[in-house]
Amino acid sequence: MKRLITLLLLSLSISFAQLRVATTYPWIGELVKDVGGDKISLYVIAKPTEDFHFVVPKPSHIAKLRNVDLLIINGASLEIGFLPPLIQQSNNPKIQPGRKGLLDLSSFVDLIEKPAVVSREMGDVHPEGNPHYHLNPHHIPLLAKAIKERMCELDQTNCGYYTSRLEDFLKRWSQKLKEWDEGFSNLKDLKVVQYHKTYNYLFKHYGIQIVGTLEPLPGIPPTARHLEELSKVAKGAKFVVYEVFRDSKPANNLAKVIGARAIVLPHDVGVEGVKNLFDLFDVILERLSQ
Image (cartoon, rainbow, N blue to C red; front, side):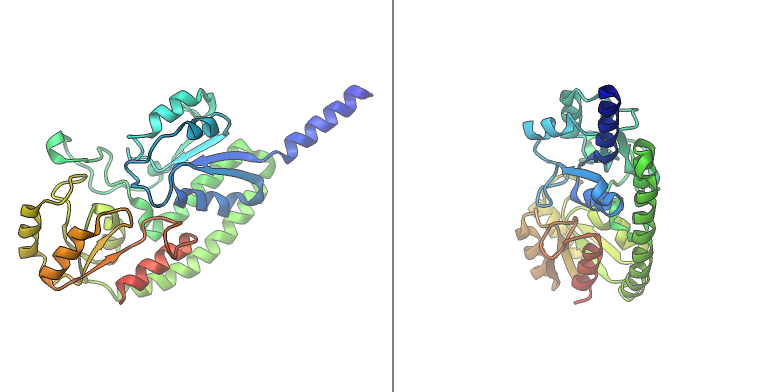
């Protein structure tokens, strides 16, 4: 009898246990919350104010990864500078490369700007292509579905719950997509300069013209010579855009020279005015429509 009671209690504890999920960036964490609801526990490694290329690996990250069931990453080498040692030192067999507990979202979208060859002379180039694919709102449903499928695979008991939440999210997202498509279509042919190639997926999808980047090469800080050359070809640009963690001086200086406005665009959830993924695109559209 005691053994039966013990088995029943163990079964109940397993049923009510949350799926333990970690993500590298806040925007992925938001998708996980939208799909997983109260059936998951969540840990996000990076802060929204950190440069997404240079997140500081900490012992606390290792401790958290040691016990997770699922680690969801951006991929396309964006986390290459900090994630591999965290995974290795976690000693968690579930999230090692090739295991079901590691989900690379970059494999579910078509990446742009794949270099034919890669060398140090090209700057911080990602061999798989531009990794900032989440900034095209049309990619988000694909990523949400991928997350749901993997969560169902690992937690079959709550698959119906995850599926229901996904359907609700996709319905709300579809409604907003109509608004964003209409709003961004009004910005077609708008000329912008950006600090890094962060918004290429968004700009190219909606026909916004990228007339230059403040970085002479990806990952290389702006130089006086490059900014001087850029000022000759960037006239006519309305905005010089940069992320919250960037030095604002190069953007402001160039903007003054070419008669543009320097503005901060959000790149992730958690920066000022962006509480969720819906806010992310609302705020971007609002700031580019000024």
